[in-house]
Length: 510
Picture (spheres, rainbow, N blue to C red):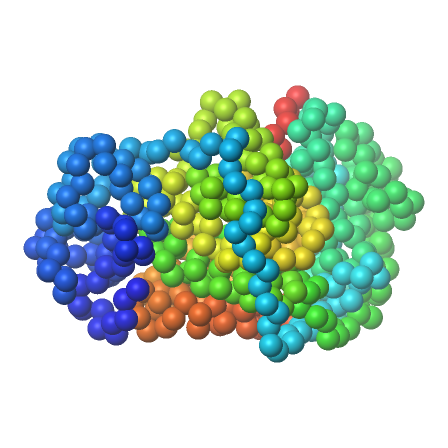
């Protein structure tokens, strides 16, 4: 790791001593002929975040980063030259049949200090970090009605209830015109069910249905009576629909308004971690810092969710030894196999990830992306594996299987009970969620300077030697507790921006 303050000095980062590649640190890249302190000359102009060959690499020879093979050279690559994406042939994914399961990760010691946050205690024993009235739709047909009603509630009712943070319309594209009994339909159905019981809703969620949909509102109602369902087809005219929703909302706002924050242990928190708009610095700065924070959270008793199947599939051989027991290991392999088959049915493979922006940021392929991505998980043993949209059941580090898409992953992590998400980004994304705050961590100083009113924490200072991974890890940990307690708002919360819920539906649409 570099420890220079002067960023005019040509800098590269070599992660592992066996790596034959390194990443260019300097903003704007470096010109052909640049000489490094160790004597390396650049044979090409290389952009920031892209890889330089530290030695001659023969055709067919391994290209190594993070101490792992990220590909094989398609042609001769000269020492000091730019290792472009087109020169790297992807390796085969790790075989799932004979992965060593467990035995590599020891339980982390608890933190010396006991940390808490200020949360809302729920009757089911969970805690919320926000106090929100959530109104769920059972079908997309009523989304417009609900949007109209929520705007009216926010204008006319919400100001009367100062202890309630927000009213959120939980709209989605599911509910009808779908193969509701297809095996894979359980994914979107359990996602919607679990979203409606998110801890930030204090048990007061409402459901607006149409009346003829396949996903009947009672399936989202945990078997309660009709007391929290408004069926639009039962109402005489549009304004009656709106009045019915508002009357039900007022009763719940009155109850939510009586809730007060109280001291809660960190073990009540479920924190999600995710990459969005990754670059070559993700695995060097932001993700290791988030991984350090993940270890701190686990040591404090919290649940940490890491996800994105396609971004761990090529590093699964590094995760399998970290499972707590064979049962968790088999569940990890089950989710990898399920996703392999899902991609195969769509005649796609893992090379569909990364995105064009990831490649411009220096990531050659999904193998390199995966090796940088899993660093977010820290070093703790993996205590559980969740199928997409399942509720978190255990404390500690949990793999929650999801696609890599930011908004789909975010929606599924919310269904798992996530209170807050930490998103690392190198290219930049304004992504956020309405139910839970998203703390954005930049991988490069340049992004923080470009977007000072969207990036919450800058990990780029790790690359320039101005901060250590541990220091930024603690900064992220303390920010999580402050945001969870309502003491601080993320930039996206201040601007009031968020992405729509995006259900993962691998089942047929009819």
